[in-house]
Amino acid sequence: MAQNIYDNPDFFSGYSQLPRQVHGLDGAPEWPAVRAMLPALTGKRVADLGCGFGWASRWMRTQGAVSVLGLDLSHNMIARAKADSSDPAIEYRIADLEMLELPEAAFELVYSALTFHYVEDFRRLTRMIHKTLVSGGDLVFTAEHPIFMAAAHPHWIADEDGRKTWPVNGYSVEGERRTDWFAKGVLKYHRTLGTTLNTLIDADFKVRRVEEFAPTREQIEQAPELAEELERPMMLLVSARKTETR
Image (cartoon, rainbow, N blue to C red; front, side, top):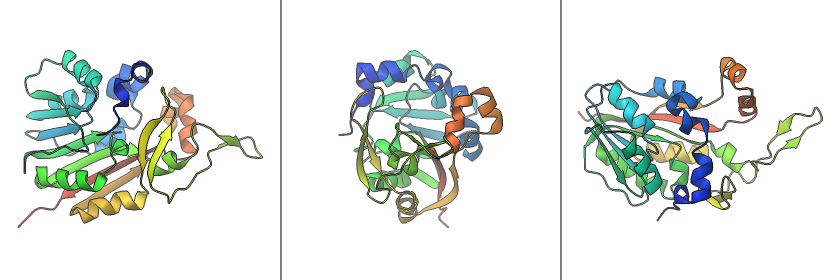
């Protein structure tokens, strides 16, 4: 079973103060890039893996999705998502992605935001997602970039010009990584960029687009702290498609 850090009171309290949780999708600087990767949603059945407070699930309904299944391991997250929505076309359920099984050909889109880096068996998950998508269905997800995870964050050092740099530790050594972020010992799983993309390819996905998110000049002007993200990519954005059968 995956680590349920989001039900840790200290973690959840700190996490709930993040701009992306206070302001929703408008507080997520990567959202415009993610939105551009999404297919047209009219009439689509969507699974939102790691739905959190349900911001994306609710937005997808406004874009014409006929139904959304929001899944999250955290009781806190699901309780908040249910409290913030009375839409009968959105179903929120507690689920562990490490063991999740969904019906075959049940969705046109599987979406996930900043969740897959908590999953140990990414190979099993991608094959399950492939099975639950219809032919021609899409997988769009974001995850912590492996370079960011392999860096010694949150600690940085200054170079000769006083610029911040983040040393990368054991990038090619895949597996468990622990960090202190709102709580001690938050467990994540490091995979190289190559492993992530090749796992999708091996599961018979066609990788359509890959973005290593960096904030725009306008975003940095509005939130100067985002300038740090120009030093190394923080997020990986991927769009892949289940090849249509003929």
